[in-house]
Image (cartoon, rainbow, N blue to C red):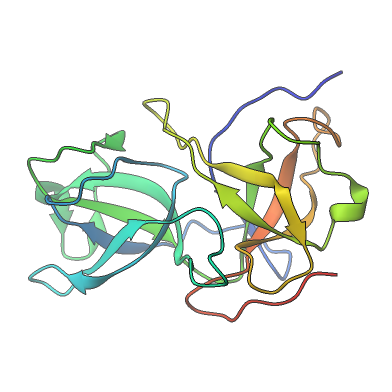
Length: 201
């Protein structure tokens, strides 16, 4: 049975030590002047600023490694507006962050460098295979569907080089997932702001 395409960006599922992901996140700020749209599952990076309360800003990640320069700090798992923030706890009250904003937004980001994510491979190049496990790949950007991220694994970029964005750790173990087009992979962010990139095998 062929794999079904269900693109959703980066979905946190567990930690590198095998423990299930416990839902822990950190709050980040998206200023109203930002012109990108964001959705749950989108990869993000530090924005180099903060709001008046010191909540750090993020920007949408850039696909492709750019010689190791396009790093990530994690993936969005919840979205809220400025008015929903009390202390440092976000009350999710939005589905996506629009490109044109009238208020600032806040997002919860799974930013622990040891989180493993599920992500679908792209469907426009040759499907990844067992021989690609433990190699590194880049991200391919995609527009959200109004609910979740449209980002996927760029399956044309497999390499052992350390300067690539994700590390392939195998397929996610479900009965409806197999090597081939639209396969769902277990990945770790390789170019993470909190850990150095590691070469693939």
